[in-house]
Image 1 (cartoon, rainbow, N blue to C red):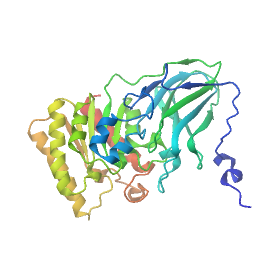
Image 2 (cartoon, rainbow, N blue to C red):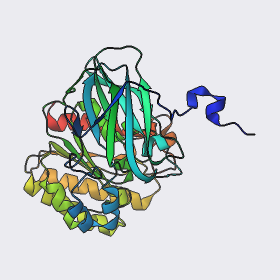
Image 3 (cartoon, helix red, strand yellow):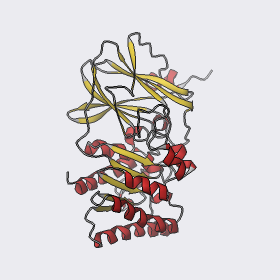
Length: 358
């Protein structure tokens, strides 16, 4: 009889029986939990990244994907010796052949140490989970700590409960620096495909590096700068806008027809909000079509500068993976792995620092 990997290696075992006799479950939609990165998160039903009535006008793809919780976060402070989750995720967990279940459907736990968010461990979903799952992480010592939980990148969550010891303290957690959120709009790469866990998506990395809240509007295969989407992006009150949809424009002609109008309409509604243009990170020097797209985005950036816009930036995606192990930064020559996302996050964070003057 073949043994499971959890039987062979206890460090790879996924616990499904929590056995926490003194646990007290609390709904994250209740105080003092703070929810970030989601649209009206206290409304019942699926957590959403944008209004459903807007998503359904954009496309069927965006309507489906707006229920994925990429960029969703929960903050709180407690002295509980453990933190458990009970996640309601209707249906089977979203299967992806080239992305770990910990990334698509897992939750990450971070603690705040010396003023920065540090990875603690992941709530690992079982492969046969249907309708959600429970998981617990035990802390090395009992003391009051600030916690941050990153929500799944490629799955929907309708309810989430945090399990803490019944006698534990629970108060409001650390807040982000006093800035409006950063807005990210783009493709599957923006959504977080294919990070090994949610905290390693590049928008989440940037948010932690800058200590600024953010909104992730990455829509896998469905970021096409439709008129309704442009209007919605322009309506948001944000500190900066990262425009990263190069990968999902179906053609050069589509990119040409939408990229400049997206900039102009966003800028008309937000005269002083920094805009950072990105091009796809997996470009190869011999890919003429991708180079044309890159040059088009660069030309739009340069035109904005020439017109007197002092609040624009540009990063050539070909530079993201530069250096040793350049071709080891993706899982499939397109979607970044954790190394690739790290190499994206650092220059994006530095560019935003300059644009925001922080």
